[in-house]
Image (tube, rainbow, N blue to C red):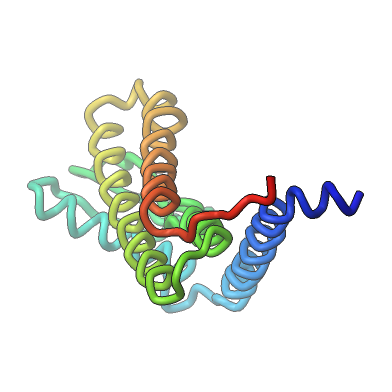
Length: 183
């Protein structure tokens, strides 16, 4: 047993670090959501921010867009030219995806300064990419509402998780510390 633990020490350390960071960040985020009363920023600050920024971008590219709090659920309604096309819920704000990204990068840590910078830059890239994803999805749903399933459940999740995967590959191949094996 000791031989196996020694042989796979780096893998075990990666898994423990990943699960620990993911757990701490997820619990912290869930606590934040629990304390968010939604009175000023409905349903919570990050979801409200993403919805308002989506609205700003849609209006800046020529659509008559508006976002309103959904009266029956914790979400923001995206309305384009008077037509309700989408809703922005807590899961749309990219925080959970950023937590997943950060957990992996920290578990594959490089130099401290590089790791912190990459975590910060990667989080901004994911957030921006997610915002653009919501804007394009909203426009797609406005023009092609019958394509909702493929747009929302296949194409756009593939793009956002594909972007995260590419960021991980850049991190592992260019910035993380090379692993030394005991083989």
